[in-house]
Length: 360
Ligand code: HEM
Image (cartoon, rainbow, N blue to C red; front, side, top):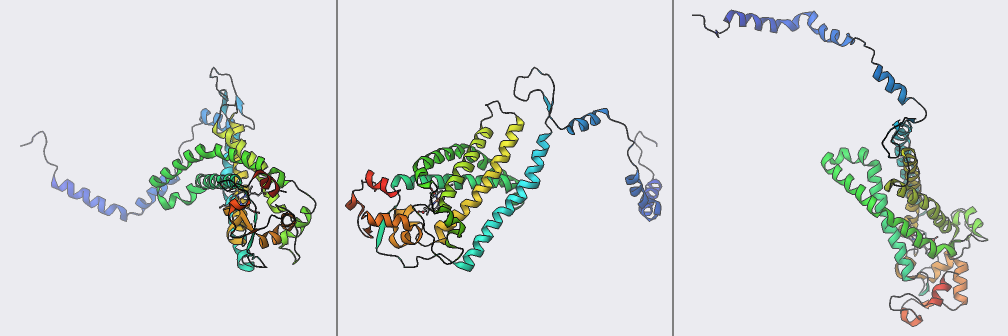
């Protein structure tokens, strides 16, 4: 009986299977894949892609008329965007990474070869007042903010190439978006810290006679002779001015990126990003050196920023002009002398006169 759906004949199925099994044995079968690859799609000229290719290759932004009122609303395509992208991926990322790596390597090498700079005369039982509570507070405020911004910024810059393969997309996207929000939120506090640091320390960072000698002798690293210095040496003064100018540029460009409401277009935003990135990497390289000297690099350096007082012998060996003046003014204290004994308030902030004197 032949119904509507009759089963296919067994003979037919067997012949089909046989053909399928034998097919790969024919040389022409393997060639079909190659043949497929070698067959080029028929080139149909596409006027739209030609148009976009030409637009992208223009040197300047192509503007037209539009009713959209936003900045850059009439810009059809911004060719500098591609230049900016290439700069970020091909220059900023690799060279920035090499620069930071080189700084760390140089410091490691220096530490291995020269070790910690000791207080040659050893720690004394005398101390000198160096930083008030306010000065230490603004310093550590700046340090915390800067380090947070540095870490979150580095995650945004290098995270995709270094962390994403290790963490996977779920965890990395969480970290990257938290870094972005944190960086944007705390960024303006860097500008505030900068202003506070500037007004408090500017007087003591004016360059003076003798600073150049300090620089030429590499702060005592070149040659064996002692290099005299005042409250701040040439290196510290240069760090201060670098912080003021480069830090100022980082803060200003950061504001441009964070608040696109000053009428800045895409090109200004791209330039701001370039200034922000280069400035931050430069500042970070210098700050790594600063942190090295302040911690493991030099015996006694951190004392002033920790307790407000530094060791007398440390001051004599690193800031001798200032130490001499303090000694002449009779400001040398016993190490265990309580702060209140020399007219400090409850917070440990020395009286106005002492605080003023400390900077001279
Ligand atoms: C863990 C991090 C840091 C440590 C251990 C550290 C340590 C020190 C120490 C020991 C001093 C006093 C040096 C002296 O008495 O001669 C100092 C001063 C200073 N630090 Fe830091 N610091 C750190 C982070 C930072 C950061 C992130 C910045 C700025 C971005 C900074 C900016 C300054 C400035 C401006 C001075 C005064 C020097 C001058 O005005 O020339 N510090 N730091």
